[in-house]
Length: 272
Image (cartoon, rainbow, N blue to C red; front, top):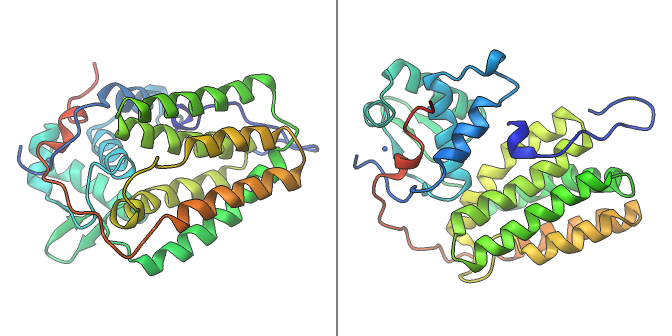
């Protein structure tokens, strides 16, 4: 994912650097965020963004923000019309997303958003604990004032977005908080693993999270920032506690599927 999503400067190691009209409903905000993310991606030389990039970013964000429901069909023709690109470019984006397990490709039936089971949650959160607890331990006591401020700003913005009922924005900011920590750690492999786990986490929360309460318990992010200024053991324990709370908020009762319209309105236009 991009530097804009993951905010913050890399933290060096002690010895060397770590480095769719009727398709779907609900996305009204976010074009600016997608345009900003897309045009600043270090993966695209010269800041160039293709139609495939736009489709990729929109679907990734829509899954992450829970604007797309588990099992939602993603038809090439509808996506091509929504984003004013060819089906070839849509297919490229879907194939890339499938490689990252953000969508599923169905034989002769196009693509859909995955439908993770409750049993999948254990594997997902086990993986997140391995990655993120280690990230927290290695960051403890080593973050600069600027990096701490970045995390504090994200946590504050997440809390405010949730207070105002801007739940999709709060979800996005929660993901950015976790991505920022992984980026600050500096190991691109750990960051890439986390980027792959976040959409599945969102789908699990969309299906199984108990009603009410914040997506990622923003106060826990505040507690985590405090722990990051202490010892590695304290930071690792606080991250584990946070992830455990998220996993324990899942129940076998699925959240009713919303009625969706024009999900990609916010993402389909090409940035100037």
